[in-house]
Length: 197
Image (cartoon, rainbow, N blue to C red; front, side, top):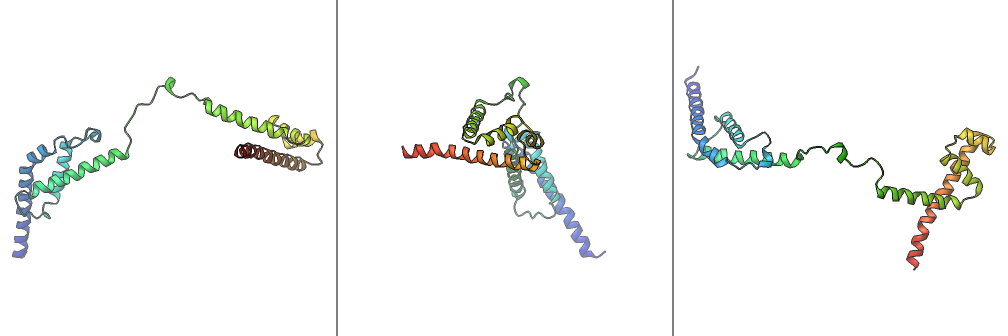
């Protein structure tokens, strides 16, 4: 081993022990400075003293890389690092919602339709009925058989006397298209009348 290597290794050991001594000396002051800096909402399972310990450990890990230029350098570094850790904890709190208790079963909203849903459903039914009334009898009967009575394509073929099942499907599809056009006309007609008035 070369004499330069021995001197370098002694310097790193002495620098490390010097930084350790400085950290140990600064800990009470940093703890006092950090007291109540971490907001209660950000605490969770962490306390301020836990963050001070984390900063001290990081400082000791970087001890050989740390250049001490004045007596308060270690304290200033630890306070800055602690401030950054506190900011990180606050950011974590903002990102995750606060834990809340789930409501009891009887406090949950009912699974049924709300009054608004019922009103919207009734409006859709009214439009369906008005559109249905404007169709030809054959189209109206096809839609009622398919939508309201739930008949299959084979049953519609037999009941209405279509030459094939596909002919019944096509007739139902065309009738539904006519119904959609009539409902769309009903929706635009009151708006046009309101805009002319």
